[in-house]
Amino acid sequence: MQLPELLESKHAAIVDRWCDLTLQVYPPESARLMIREKDRFRNPVGRVTRECLESLFEGLRTGRPPEEMVDALDGIVRIRAVQDLSPSAALAFLLQLKQAIREELGDDVSTRVPAEQTTAMHCGIDRLALQAFDIFVLCREKVHDLRIGEIKRRTSVLLERMGEPARCGPCDNVNGGCGE
View 1: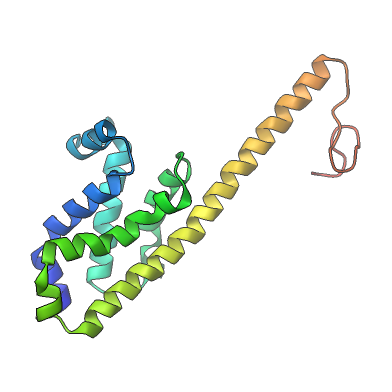
View 2 (view 1 turned 90 degrees about the vertical axis):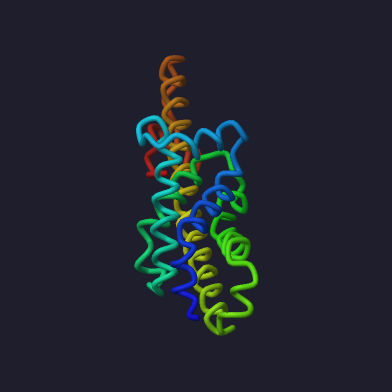
């Protein structure tokens, strides 16, 4: 049997298991709510997570290149990049797909699927993980830039209230003359 057909036969079970594994990074009560609540307005994180995982699984199952799955990857990574998660915890969900497949397919993979198909699937997951890391880093940089900008604005306001002109740290110019 070919791996895509085997994955299709267990599609719902694999995605459900992957979603469960992905949401385990959250506190148990939050994870249960994200799994149970289907309303996109009451549970936007759970809904986006599920939709992105569905899309990523379908893309991997059908052999789409990782570049074509950027939107789904971006959706879930952006959410995790702004949360208080370590990079490894935020991106572990991709590698957990391997676990979900192994748990749901069991011995079927090793006995019924050619090894090169399994290896190709694992390589596709690994490429997605690398792409997710790039997205994650860009998102975290943006968050830090926003925080630094806010700190600069607050400092400037405080200095103005105290009667001091705002100065640029790197060049000491009044009102940030160097553009930093």
